[in-house]
Length: 441
Image 1 (cartoon, one colour):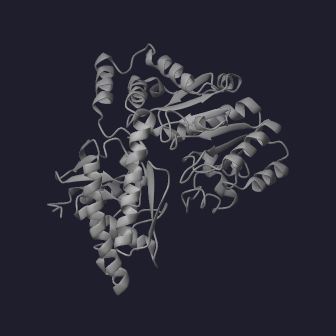
Image 2 (tube, one colour):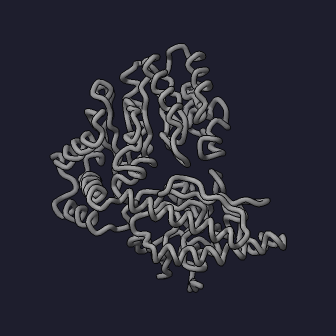
């Protein structure tokens, strides 16, 4: 079992919450989402799927892998080299970097339906750009959406109508504080698979919808008939269809997953895995739609910085040369098979859902959050950053998987005993983890 010599990261996290509202810049990396009071919280080095915390303790990352950004693994040598060269040659100047054009050409080559591209640095702002372009193109205001699409006003405004509108989209409990009340009624949610709910939106909003923003899939295979029906209705009502593939892109194939099926959006947004840990977001689309960007002011200094473009070009190259999708998917299938077998051996009821490269452990029992927290706590003691989500990477070798499964088997037995004895919560060294957004301090 891994002996943690100290936990400077947990101490620093407590300090961070007193001087950084929310503690950090990303909800998904808050210590409270994993193991309140005991999560190491900060790293000094990350390589492959290994992380060293502030005290030099070593962990294998069998959790969010940079929240899905690093399919190739942390600090991939080819990506590092490309970024280092970009920095040494100058990552910013008064002229534009040529890699910007090269990346636009490459993404259009990968997505034959698209003709033009714009770029940003993060997923949320890329979605906001796509929405701005759609509103500019259609001269309409309202947005219908399905799924999770970031933090910007256009999205959170849906909770001005009903503060539970976003609860079933991914994150419950999101308060639209700070979002202008004037946006009330401009953002309209519908559920995945609910075509009648979407028809109702169209009926009640009398041709005022500028765009539909939706994920192609999140936790399971896409509902193709639903997607095709949405596409047909968007065509009929002259609505811009935006596929948010920030999370799903580069998981089932190179580029957007929609390429696997004969369904074309008007705009597709890519991010996360595109830069393998370096900030880059792409908004690609049909020529006449994307040209509407010129009718609006969409501009930012660091969208022209060189590193993101260089990293993305090299990332795509590695994907193409090393059969990344096939290898990562095979590893994910192995992890799922072994986890289910280990749980069965322990007589513990769990399920593993999600696509092959993004696995989600579904704990049953009276209090799944307690089970999840115990699992995270005990896996940490055994040298693994672990939660109920595993973003599989190229760096997850069979040897590392074997070690993870061996540790998980021990923890499953511990959890089963706690369930039987009704003593599971007594195994906790601290508070239960959070399940969604909540204010800290």
